Image: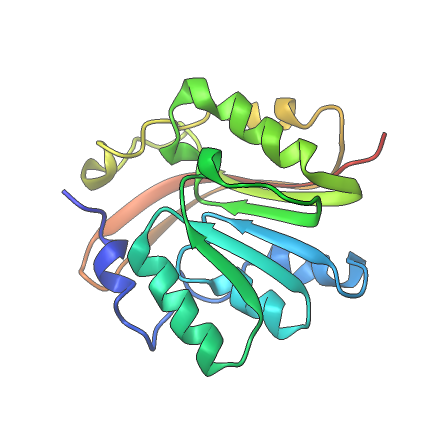
Length: 200
């Protein structure tokens, strides 16, 4: 069964997951002018579109063709400069380092054995003094029934902090929340978010 968001991505006038997250908005003053940003697993572009609108150089990709088609439509309508492609994160062709890499609500869909390699890539391709913003679901709540087949890499509570123990953790949040989507699907989630800076 395909995930609910695939149909919602076809709605060109509504953001499937809402407005930009608070931590993305709050990092903006700390980014250099013209910063290069990667939105990994961008969905229908709530972060990529926002940041491109502020004049940053944004690359964005997602495994969903519907998502990237929507981002392309919205960037053209808004005359925004976003480089997009459809691909899996481990197939993305990194060509330069980034001031900020965002991976929001993606890692829990990646097999556990591939997560260290994935996060390793994010860290390697981040510039010195650059940032990673990571948001993921943890095992503090059961996986929703409709996502059980694809949410195959749920993190243990606090695990993401260990991945960034060699960076400066600027902000961390752990919370539980419930949401309801357009098709009436209701979920309860446990989420952790981290903002980490690469300082060696």
